Image 1 (cartoon, rainbow, N blue to C red):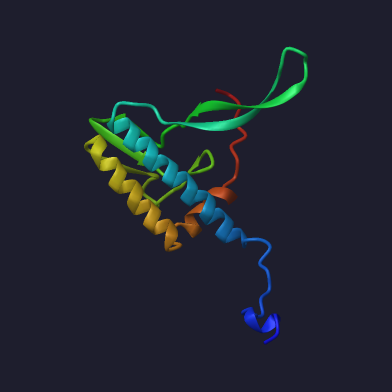
Image 2: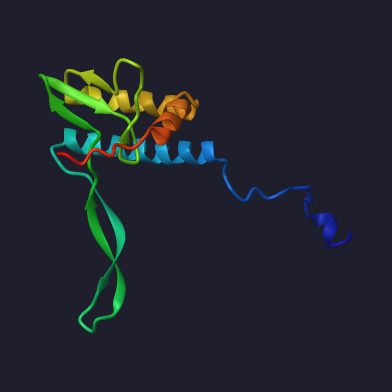
Length: 145
């Protein structure tokens, strides 16, 4: 028996990049999963922080890469006697319908199920069109604030 006969050989073409839609969906899913962690930490009364690499100068003046704690900003906030949950792509809130861009819940414990629903919608591709609208929305040029 030859050496190659022992191996399982199949034809394959390597996928080098994700399509733009898949890349956006992956980025959104990563952010939603992070927000679920933020909601769980908020229910425990804590802040959720991740370790992120940053460049800084040491005593000798050289640039070195260090690990720093970064507090993740939540997509939900308390207002009107309850909590509003926004889904964001980057820093832009996604308009979930023509009526609004946030889901209202009465208690903090209801935030996590909303985020899990948004995650399942993102997995199924239901948010792809809304993400595309958020990306292609015209930028506000008003600087009179």
